[in-house]
Image (cartoon, rainbow, N blue to C red; front, side):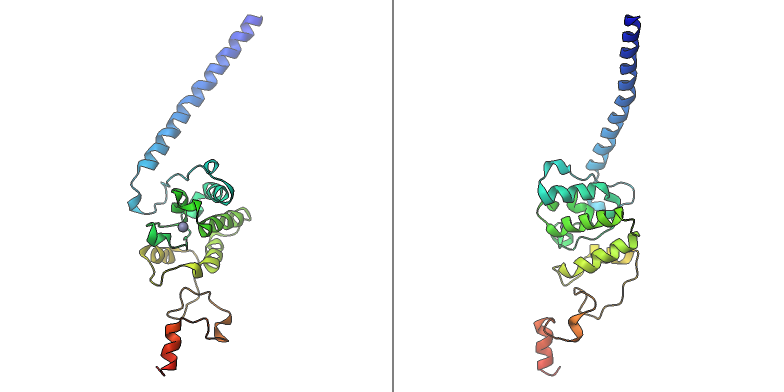
Length: 195
Ligand SMILES: [Zn+2]
């Protein structure tokens, strides 16, 4: 009797490893395919590059990578306003975390954490895009919009209020009407000259 049940247990263990084995092999194969795919083709719907393992980082960096890993499909449709679209040829927030870029960048980390929080709160995706844009767009360091930013703006899911020309990097409403001190110095010079 004891021998029989022992045999059964061994058999069961064997069957379990047999069923797990090929699966994990297949997973390894697909992740190898995804990571070896060329990154220059830009964002695609189905094939997302893998987020680097959060365990290899500490503190805020680990939290950022973990957040992005939890919602890669959301992050792939958000824009990172740290300027990495120009400096690192990134197309979206996901790109910050499939590379080492997200280790040092607080903007990337905060955007990913905020996106995860709102996703967990069941916020509509358009709202997540809008809130992240409202909170971080003014941090974008460049005057010209990159092709990545133009593409993002054309594809986002909410209708943005029209901005006055030359003010696209500033928060939409607020104190601008009361004071001109927040305007770039060159426009003040233009006003002083009576232009
Ligand atoms: Zn970034």
